[in-house]
Length: 86
Ligand SMILES: [Zn+2]
Image (tube, rainbow, N blue to C red; front, side, top):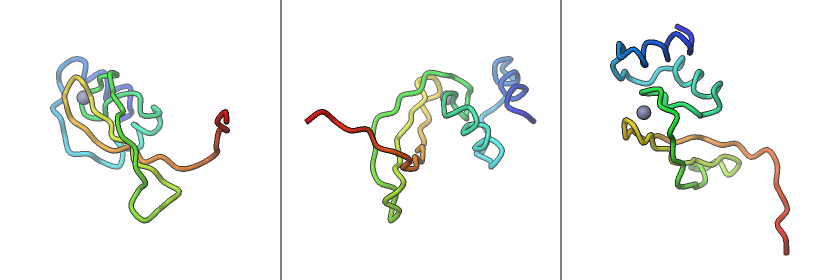
């Protein structure tokens, strides 16, 4: 099932929350983390960041869906820096 047909099912109320799968994770990443992978809502709140275990090049950001109240962690990879004014 592709992401668009998945979202259609969710919005028609035919989809019950299901365990996370590789396909759903891939769809979430392809949508750049803008849509809840459980219910399809786009009202997500990112609140915390911390390094990802023993991998200093990665960071985990806590994401919560304001609709279904589930939360998960986005894994961000270091790609660049932005200088701050001194
Ligand atoms: Zn949700």
